[in-house]
Image: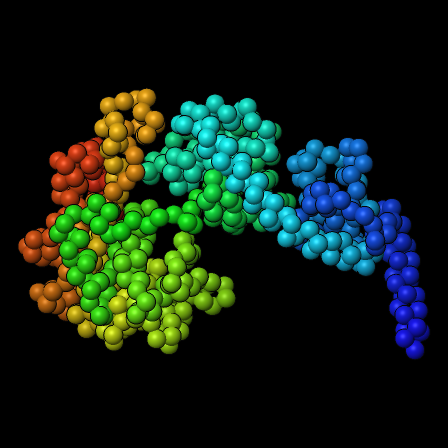
Length: 522
């Protein structure tokens, strides 16, 4: 009986191959049987496994300057566009053939055979390449000098190794009519790195989209993705965004070093008065600490420093983030997924059933999240979060505008922090050496916060009860001796940590935000 079953199965397979061969003719394609075909790994991986399943095409043979690929479905315009982009990327002519579903499945199984070997090898090679560039790069000028000298395949390694070396937070690749401009964001300021020609730009853009699992055949719509790479012994998480522009796709890669050392609170250059208030606020068994400021103002760094101080064996810490930027050992970190219904509010509600001592909510964006967080703070949990508000006193009317009842605010907030980042004067040249290797001649290296902290005492309850204006909360805070961000900045100027121009730069941002806030509450 078993022999009969085998024979029947064999006949069915032969029938499938015959059907596929007939279909190939109707599509005007040559038929190929790939079952048992000896596919070389380098040829197979010309098309990634994800691309193979997305576009239903596999590579099986390279002959001269021709790459032979096969599909098991009727060819579509999407497939043809993908193959055109692939041909441009690899510099080969592509010949499309037709195979059976059985053949296609066989090739997919070959991917699995090579998967683990590829992962180990890629990591080792990436570390080696990164180390090589780290040795040769001493300044931005060195990166600029090498951009047009290295091969296209090495260009991405150069850009990321350079970014890690000079502590860039983001890499920008901006297409122009002639090619693309490359810029790094260093200490919050964009700096020109070099110019790519059109060939380099297209090759780099395709490679980055491939790594980030973006659709190669989509160039007219925004896409987001991520990938990891190893550079100079570091694991780098790269958050990638593509946006259609006049001359091509504008690419921005955020660099997140996963094994980065997080500074302790005492190492952040926080003024002594604010540091004492922060330590007292997080030493309480319950209550809420809110950090306010725009994107890029250092809120995450401050909150992670607080979490590091609180992370002890005797407490359970859960964070709800969008996205999870850095992995913190010993802390349960949850990634928000709005599409799956995993919003801040829904996740926070579920988190409270996990018996946490400390909760960090990445951002309070709506009334529901704010209500749950404040109720948690009133019922025995220490809650940390961020809020979009211009200043520390402005956070309270912002929550009232969301529809939060005054009774939830009175007594639930331990501390409100507001901060901006200013560039720190280079400790080596003090801004006096244009040839300084430490700062690349910019005069600055690193950033420090200018901060204000407000402890809402019972003296604020009357203002909260009648939902006072932002100006009234600001005046009350000053009456109670709160040092403003501007005052903190000028103190740091006097100490030689930053410059007056830097403080004035962030002061303009504060003033602009204040005007917008006043209009919004009018």
